[in-house]
Image 1 (cartoon, protein in one colour):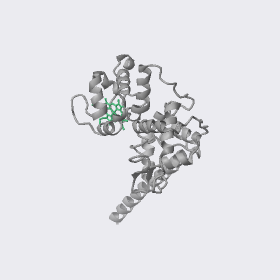
Image 2 (image 1 turned 90 degrees about the horizontal axis):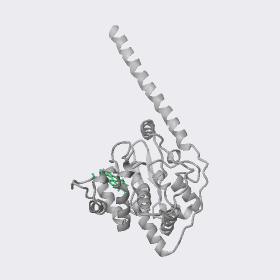
Image 3 (image 1 turned 135 degrees about the vertical axis):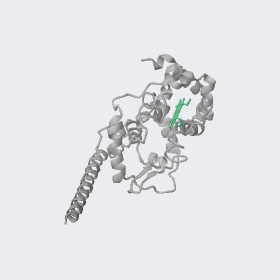
Image 4 (image 1 turned 180 degrees about the vertical axis):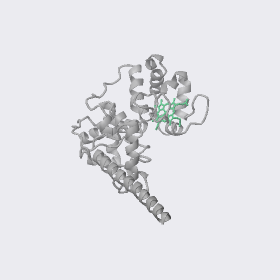
Length: 290
Ligand code: HEC
């Protein structure tokens, strides 16, 4: 008799735990759904988009440096499924040629620099709008010129969607690292920077619009510790830095991971002047004091 009762209590306790867990997942699902559906009232800006061949070529280089081409959006800009999970989650990087043909310049500016889609909802922070919000009108115009020159890809991509596992992961990510939504963390009042007036300003601009994607918005390393503070460049001579940017080989010669690939596929497109400006800015002790 007592054995039967014990089993009954164990069963009920387990059922209770499973029930509570299910309620927690449903609550998180609804909460995250509210986040994803939140609308932002931001007006896009109409910037000049050139269409001559030289601008398109320079736009391609700027897009490659920032990973708009040859990064998350596929080998060029045709997009693809970035993440797929067993719970039905699918994170899709859109086809940028198709998007650039369909969206107005204002809509593109708003999506890229403010992280807000034409329907008013935010892009996830996987899309580095936080970094791209600091792009100058000129550089964004050139990147749009290149995207507008790209044909739409052959394939029709599916929509992104987020299953329960992704939402629960997102819930914990949000508690640890802040919002998952780009529009939430961007300063929308921030005006685009003027053309850099000297080498120091140019170096700062390049670091802010290329390196912050992975090295944190203050360049002092990502919050999860996967990338170091760029204060390490204090130890790099101009030549060492050039070898890192062009060949992906760091001081000390060890084999890097992601950074090596990013340097070889994207940063080889930096000009000598850009490398000098970046090195000058990152290796100046004044920029790291406080
Ligand atoms: C796509 C992500 C990504 C971007 C963009 C990126 N880095 Fe990195 N970087 C990394 C990672 C990850 C590491 C850590 C080493 C590794 O895993 O490859 C790293 C390491 C480094 C290091 C340390 C090398 C050493 O001595 O150990 C330096 C310096 C560096 N990056 C400079 C830069 C600069 C300058 C830029 C901008 C021009 C930049 N990175 C942009 C991902 C990135």
